[in-house]
Image (cartoon, rainbow over all chains, first blue to last red):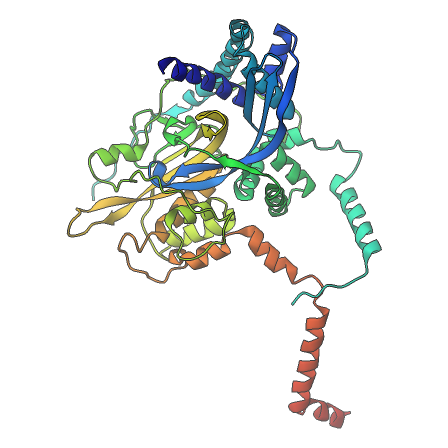
Length: 151
Length: 362
């Protein structure tokens, strides 16, 4: 059982990464690493929405905040592995790439993909996030309360 | 009553052709691209996403271009598009405690753990027109400083530890959804929050301001205001587990308000909550104030008859698409209605003897 849950944790991590990747970036890395294998659509890319929920007071009862656009698809490789993608936005090409990578990560090329696609992608996204966090940190202030008159 | 009329097809076609030409404006001036609107008018984009109730910056930018910058018209376009999308599901509630904060300030605690982070704010600017922006120019890179990592705790959490503020108790009741069923009274708090987060910014601001001026006063302080990105996680039925499907930027405002207490509970601060798509600070603060005002009954306060306390009044008038739809329909042909009104007023005047008086004068 433990193996299965570790496996789905890994899968969750790469699928989450691919969902948030900048437009076209995963495709560029994949095409730089290997030729795309043949596949059959189980579900051609489809654009829809997800209702984003939040909690009242951040921790209380859930409420519907609003929707976001999502593209999803599913495909199967000739060798039988099934790849899924659910990614933010209206991006059919990126959804196809994400599903292909998801399927390929279940084959013997997974290690190669990890080093040539997932790790560089994660590093780039971490760098971009860190750059933003560093700009925010530069705007950190200390307020001093001035002494008020006594009366 | 609106009555369908026929004819005018040619005039309508020509009007729309002229609209397209006017939208483009002087062709000697470069045309605006969607990416330019998305990147350079991002707060307009954020408002359209928040009130259009659909997070997609490119679509919002397209809507702004198509609407010639009329944001309510752009919101209308987004709402119409939204109805064409199949709904894949609902996300897990987002965790704003795990937000990557661009901005995070508190008006109540100056030394809060994690610090006061101003972010890219208009606050403390002089509000003088900057004529440098009228000329092209490169922008210098904003300074950076080493950042702390880890989650930024909510300010209300600190007060909560001392029991000084009401708790937002964990609950997993599936919320009602006003996009799937008509908004009916009484509206519970989750439904009110859904209506408020997509409500018109101006209307929400006006109501919030009215509570500050004394119409349902509840002494709000901004306990915390934070803006930043949070991941959105959704359960994928085909997989049997949840994945992150994307990331949204949100503005969250938690107000700390005056006390309530009872025989069983000691006095403690109460809370209002605002959470809105995008960097939409004015709206999030307004939402928190109005949310708090609408909680009068639950918190055992008096109904002083203030507009912001009246859930039916607030929720049925807060949606700018419903409002503009009803308001603007009165400009469409009402000839039959008006014909009967004309006949009625002539009859009344006859009965009042107006015509005879006029005839006598002639």
